[in-house]
Length: 123
Image (tube, rainbow, N blue to C red):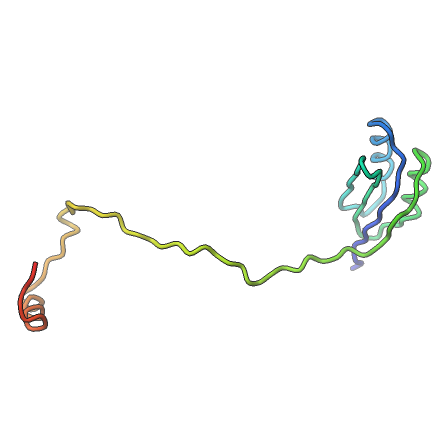
Protein backbone atom coordinates (compact mmCIF):
# COMPACT_ATOMS: atom_id res chain seq x y z
CA UNK A 1 0.00 0.00 0.00
CA UNK A 2 1.31 3.43 -0.91
CA UNK A 3 2.12 5.96 1.76
CA UNK A 4 -0.04 9.09 1.94
CA UNK A 5 1.44 12.34 0.65
CA UNK A 6 0.97 15.91 1.74
CA UNK A 7 0.97 18.50 -1.05
CA UNK A 8 0.87 22.24 -0.35
CA UNK A 9 -0.04 24.66 -3.15
CA UNK A 10 0.29 28.42 -3.06
CA UNK A 11 -2.91 29.78 -4.59
CA UNK A 12 -3.91 33.36 -5.28
CA UNK A 13 -7.55 33.49 -4.22
CA UNK A 14 -9.02 36.80 -3.20
CA UNK A 15 -12.66 35.98 -2.52
CA UNK A 16 -14.97 33.11 -1.66
CA UNK A 17 -15.92 32.55 -5.29
CA UNK A 18 -12.29 31.75 -6.25
CA UNK A 19 -11.95 29.61 -3.13
CA UNK A 20 -14.99 27.51 -4.08
CA UNK A 21 -13.72 27.06 -7.64
CA UNK A 22 -10.28 25.96 -6.39
CA UNK A 23 -11.77 23.51 -3.89
CA UNK A 24 -14.07 22.07 -6.55
CA UNK A 25 -11.21 21.68 -9.04
CA UNK A 26 -8.84 19.97 -6.58
CA UNK A 27 -11.52 17.73 -5.09
CA UNK A 28 -11.92 15.92 -8.42
CA UNK A 29 -8.53 14.20 -7.90
CA UNK A 30 -8.61 10.55 -6.86
CA UNK A 31 -7.25 9.37 -3.51
CA UNK A 32 -7.71 12.60 -1.56
CA UNK A 33 -8.30 12.14 2.19
CA UNK A 34 -8.43 15.80 3.29
CA UNK A 35 -8.39 19.29 1.81
CA UNK A 36 -7.54 22.38 3.88
CA UNK A 37 -7.62 25.94 2.54
CA UNK A 38 -5.86 28.68 4.50
CA UNK A 39 -7.04 32.02 3.11
CA UNK A 40 -4.74 34.02 5.39
CA UNK A 41 -1.54 32.38 4.09
CA UNK A 42 -3.09 31.64 0.67
CA UNK A 43 -2.19 27.95 0.90
CA UNK A 44 -4.16 24.90 -0.16
CA UNK A 45 -3.08 21.64 1.52
CA UNK A 46 -4.22 18.23 0.35
CA UNK A 47 -3.45 14.85 1.91
CA UNK A 48 -4.08 11.55 0.22
CA UNK A 49 -2.79 8.30 -1.23
CA UNK A 50 -1.43 8.18 -4.82
CA UNK A 51 -1.84 11.91 -5.40
CA UNK A 52 -0.10 13.37 -8.42
CA UNK A 53 0.99 16.95 -7.53
CA UNK A 54 1.30 17.91 -11.21
CA UNK A 55 -2.30 16.90 -12.01
CA UNK A 56 -3.49 19.01 -9.09
CA UNK A 57 -1.35 21.90 -10.32
CA UNK A 58 -2.85 21.68 -13.80
CA UNK A 59 -6.39 21.71 -12.42
CA UNK A 60 -5.70 24.66 -10.13
CA UNK A 61 -3.99 26.79 -12.79
CA UNK A 62 -7.25 26.78 -14.78
CA UNK A 63 -8.91 28.55 -11.84
CA UNK A 64 -6.19 30.77 -10.32
CA UNK A 65 -2.44 31.40 -10.23
CA UNK A 66 -0.80 28.45 -8.48
CA UNK A 67 2.62 27.28 -7.25
CA UNK A 68 3.64 23.93 -5.78
CA UNK A 69 5.21 24.79 -2.41
CA UNK A 70 5.77 21.42 -0.76
CA UNK A 71 5.46 17.70 -1.47
CA UNK A 72 6.28 15.31 1.39
CA UNK A 73 5.12 12.04 2.95
CA UNK A 74 2.70 12.37 5.85
CA UNK A 75 4.39 12.16 9.24
CA UNK A 76 2.92 9.52 11.50
CA UNK A 77 1.87 10.70 14.92
CA UNK A 78 3.84 9.16 17.76
CA UNK A 79 1.51 7.89 20.44
CA UNK A 80 2.71 8.08 23.99
CA UNK A 81 2.17 4.88 25.91
CA UNK A 82 2.54 6.48 29.32
CA UNK A 83 -0.93 7.91 29.71
CA UNK A 84 -1.62 9.21 33.18
CA UNK A 85 -5.02 8.10 34.37
CA UNK A 86 -6.60 10.02 37.21
CA UNK A 87 -6.86 8.03 40.39
CA UNK A 88 -10.40 7.67 41.59
CA UNK A 89 -11.23 6.39 45.03
CA UNK A 90 -14.56 4.66 45.44
CA UNK A 91 -16.12 5.71 48.71
CA UNK A 92 -19.17 4.02 50.14
CA UNK A 93 -21.77 6.52 51.32
CA UNK A 94 -22.24 6.76 55.07
CA UNK A 95 -25.54 5.30 56.19
CA UNK A 96 -26.27 5.97 59.88
CA UNK A 97 -29.41 3.80 59.80
CA UNK A 98 -28.68 0.58 57.91
CA UNK A 99 -31.45 -1.61 56.64
CA UNK A 100 -31.88 -4.96 58.40
CA UNK A 101 -30.43 -6.75 55.36
CA UNK A 102 -27.19 -4.74 55.76
CA UNK A 103 -26.70 -5.66 59.44
CA UNK A 104 -24.15 -8.42 59.93
CA UNK A 105 -25.15 -11.07 62.39
CA UNK A 106 -22.54 -13.21 64.14
CA UNK A 107 -22.81 -16.70 65.43
CA UNK A 108 -21.65 -17.77 68.92
CA UNK A 109 -18.41 -19.10 67.49
CA UNK A 110 -17.58 -15.73 65.90
CA UNK A 111 -18.31 -13.91 69.18
CA UNK A 112 -16.05 -16.28 71.07
CA UNK A 113 -13.23 -15.51 68.59
CA UNK A 114 -13.73 -11.79 69.17
CA UNK A 115 -13.65 -12.21 72.94
CA UNK A 116 -10.55 -14.41 72.85
CA UNK A 117 -8.63 -12.20 70.40
CA UNK A 118 -9.40 -8.82 71.99
CA UNK A 119 -9.76 -9.89 75.56
CA UNK A 120 -12.83 -7.72 76.07
CA UNK A 121 -15.83 -6.98 73.96
CA UNK A 122 -16.14 -3.34 72.86
CA UNK A 123 -19.03 -1.78 71.04
